[in-house]
Amino acid sequence: MASSISQKLRRYGVPSIVVSAYHFSRSRALISWSARVQFSKKITFGRRCVVKPFAVIQSSGGYVSFGLECAISSFDHFSTGEGDIVVGDYVRFAPNCTIVGGTKQVRDRSKLIVDQPEVHPNGIIIGDDVLVGAGSVILPASRIGRGAVIGAGSVVNGDIPEYAIVAGAPAKIIGYRK
Image (cartoon, rainbow, N blue to C red; front, top):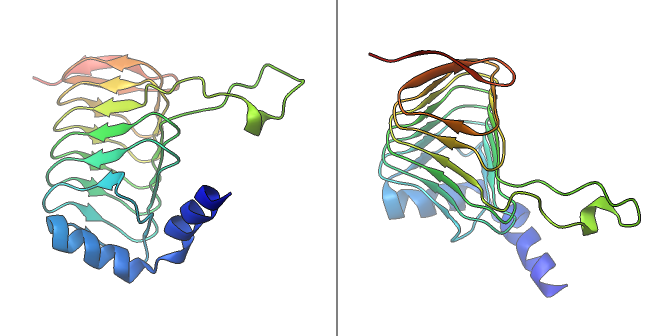
């Protein structure tokens, strides 16, 4: 119970200006006061990251780590389960992206969904120099290689090779960067 209250206070009780100042002092990350970043040691930013208004970054157990000079656009949502979300250097997220590091099992009707274990505690790894197009969704256990481009509206559920250009739902390779 105390852990639940503590998590709710860190997620909802710390003013955004405090979270912004904290991350700026640690890594020179620029976080909009209108963004909702949970106050947690499990969320870290590399030097000169930018988080635009109305982005949401929260942890439900796993770590969320951004490399150097990442850009998180408005209305992006990053949320972990038990798995981590690890983002490399110089990664760009266009608006309205959803990155989900965990999901619940749903098959057992005798238990509430909230009481069922996570299916993919492996999390998500995104390599350096990746571009994630507007409205894309990255699902648990996905691995995106260095230099990949994720087309707008794509749904990534699995491995994307280095320098691949993908699009669609589910995301399919449509080419490679040269």
